Image 1 (cartoon, rainbow, N blue to C red):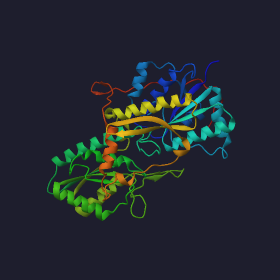
Image 2: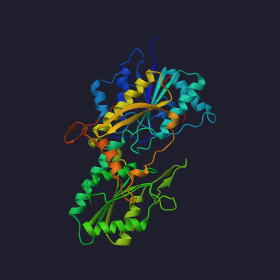
Image 3: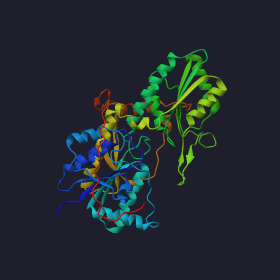
Image 4: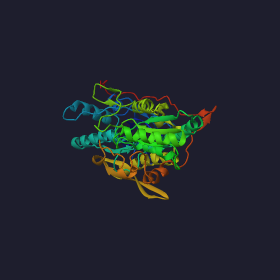
Length: 418
């Protein structure tokens, strides 16, 4: 009898190395043709399952997989879509399992953040209730680095390598343009509730008075007087000041300094905290202030990917297949650190219920006592994650990325509206 197929899907915000995890899943599955017939990829995460928009990866050549691994973004597309509770919407789950059955899916590898791990858990539990033979393994990724039970999240190392580099380069530019008036640069980065990305900017500060001079985190209430005093002191010493700001920084009342919009589902989009901080510095101190937003740049910068990050992203995909074939289901792969100097790590698994919809914030020992910068403990922990360069190929002076035309498989079921 022909073995079952595996389904792979990407979900949530993408990263510079998420496709390395896809490559890891596909390569590992091919090593077991007697256990997994082929890997089918869903377009746009769970939405691709519901719409039966699927891609057969069996024809991808080795060179194409290398191209996939060296390309940012989600090759198969991603989504931000939460499944309903099965009790509230049984038809939604029935559709998913009809699609899985129609395509003989026996393994599901869901690549995403803590919300995506909740989706994986929902599907694993539904399969168990239905007695449907489905092995579910979550594959972690997020530049936010906020998944519990893993030393770090694939995608984070490359994001902070880019941000710390950008901060260092901007500060050199800033220093060369300093004047009697004083200059300030504010870089706003992602980080709704957790300051991991803003903290990563702090790696650029490799000596006393190196940028960033101030790091503002969601875990530390924004004290305007304290921040202004720190900025003023820095400008008086150096003539300039560089600041990293997490988008989710909050005042003493717990409310975000800036909020862009709230969608129909109640999702609050944050943004503009950097502009608010810049405006307050300009108004209070009279300095010339520029601000920038990392936005998609910080998670798409494959041209400066960390070799460690790429290796870990690939490894969690490979190990997901090995764990599934060994009988583990309802689990997520996780990175375990065994040493920081030298940096040593391996991949393990953790039950999905210990990571699903849970969020890891920056621990207090990673924040300097004054709350305005990262500690040496953070530097020791984070520096190995940005180690090494994993450059893509270049053509005509620009990175050469693989942009395949994905051929969708014929649908076997009636159309479905999400």
